[in-house]
Amino acid sequence: MRIEIFKIILFATMIIFFSCNNTANCKSNKIVSKKNSDSVIKFSSRTFIINYSNLIYEHENKKIKIPIFNGNMGDITYNEFLEYCYIMKYLNPNTAETSLIIKADKGKLTKTFHEFLMFYKGNILKNSDISKPAKIKVDGGALDIFYDFKVSGVPFVLYISVGTDNNEIDVDLIKSIFDIKLNENVEKPIFQYRFWKNYTSDEF
Image 1 (cartoon, helix red, strand yellow):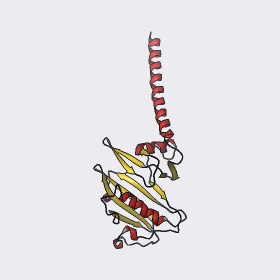
Image 2 (tube, helix red, strand yellow; image 1 turned 180 degrees about the vertical axis):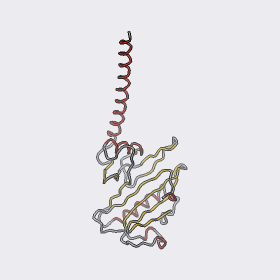
Image 3 (spheres, helix red, strand yellow; image 1 turned 90 degrees about the horizontal axis):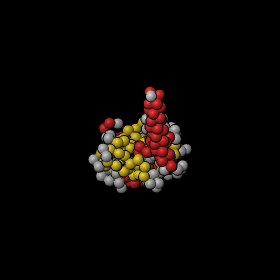
Image 4 (cartoon, one colour; image 1 turned 30 degrees about the vertical axis):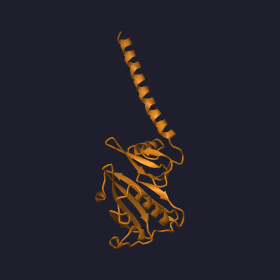
């Protein structure tokens, strides 16, 4: 009798295990099948180019849609983006990207950067003075820019890092971000950006 009960318990445990395992696999397959080779591109360690139209953040049952510059591949949640990176081994589990990447054509870094800023002026930064970020930091020729904004009452920071042609920029003399001359002579004309949920520029 005890042997029969043990067999029943063992059989039930196996069913539960394989059911859970198949559910996880189905979830992973669903996430992978939603992507194609151009939707999320690993640029370097923990940096990515994403070509989705919108990145959706979740906060207390709210779905917060953040548009992506030059994106045209529909929507993806931020959690799905991370899960995809884990599945593809682009990121280690429980880690996040350090930044997203915008590529520009040679000699058009400044033009692309300005287009990026004006794109966000049309949506998440519509209530901001786009020419004057909330905070600017300088590290050598690198310019770190921070814009504060809110969506559905949730605070966000848009962080941008871009290289300039001046290694000795005085932040106090910057009247407009559009006056900064970027480094058009780099081999790979890019700049980095990232969205931080539940942060303000004061925390950076």
